Amino acid sequence: MAKDPEGETIERDLIHRGGYDSIRAVRSGKYLRMLVKAEDPGRAKEIVMRMCNELRLFNPVVHSCSVSVKSGGGKGGRG
Image (cartoon, rainbow, N blue to C red; front, side, top):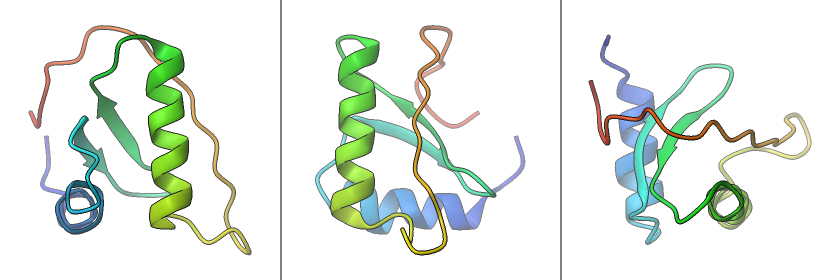
């Protein structure tokens, strides 16, 4: 997987410092892709929505925030 300095910065400087240690990886582009460790898909969505709103990972004036959950298959970190 190619390096993603913006995603790594968001993960390190916002997400982990904000106390969201269950987020395992972030990819930045026109969207953020996150690998989340959670008990179930509903909990994963709840964690991500709360985090996005609390840490202002998007500007609601020009962006929208939506979360979709894809279960299983993750490797637990950067590839």
